[in-house]
Length: 153
Image (cartoon, rainbow, N blue to C red):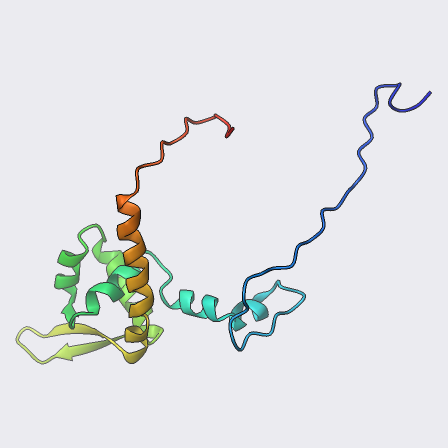
């Protein structure tokens, strides 16, 4: 009597053939076969760039500093949804990564201004492209949300 006749389902492993990627590897990147681990992630130019603007509100901070230097209170007005704590954290992180500079202005009372560095200004074409896509997305009709627990067709 066969397994099929006994009602036993026998699953044979069939691996799908891995297709070659048609994406162009950025210049200067040597693709590794391992593909996993911190070493290959650090060598990826996309990862290095995204690391600069990672964190909640970081792209917004860079965006609002692109026009002119801003003080902390001005950035709070520019980005009303961000809390003072998170904005302060993000400014420290961006300064540590070399994206912005912090300058103490000798006024009474003393104030601090934040400004983009050359590295921060290099990020602006990418952020501008993302913002343009966002504008186009706003013009698209809204996709209806699925009810919880329903499956896609």
